[in-house]
Length: 259
Image (cartoon, rainbow, N blue to C red; front, side, top):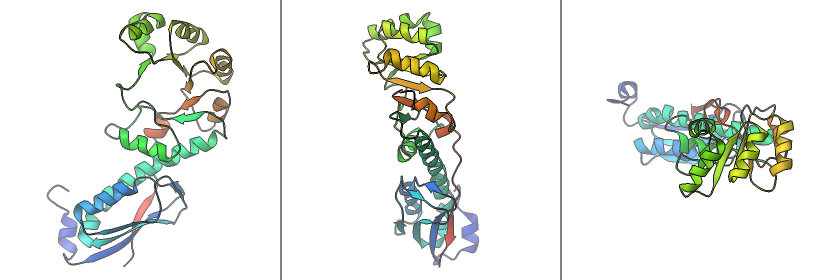
């Protein structure tokens, strides 16, 4: 707002009130309604915000998802920020639901990643959960995850795992590009595997070797077209990063004057 909304200050009477409907202009999974409400209430604590949907529910194009009533200048000043958060989070939730549905009922669960817009990780992960995904690794502090650059720096998969064990960690996930690397990781003490950019054939082989012994996560290059074949290999998890939380298309949501 800076020094204030000069448009509202210039043209909207201080005593004017407004009733407006917040409308989804395309089919979507709604996410962010409590946050939108908070924006309006920040500027008009006495406003009335009536949600007509709930986060995580599907809505159709043209459907009103909330109605807000209050001081016109306050609601108009808060409008864009409230809609921005709704559009962003609903876009993430909708994309997550598309990926879940594209898995076609396979037992695997969809995971999100740390590939999030800076500053929006918790909100992005809330949105993916509204879409049906499972939150995975909030930050660098909650799980050991040995990736290719860790391995290169340590010199080998085995030395990296050994260092993690000696540091007192007993849950260790290792990123593997090949089945041979996966064999070494499991032998060295890995407790779960991230199978990176493996073909469905390689994933099935990994399931044959390690399935039921340790959790298996498929990752890398997963698309809406490929996720079902990946999920049906028998892996426990499929993770999607950029498409879910960095580049999900925002949902078109508007605020329409009612009275």
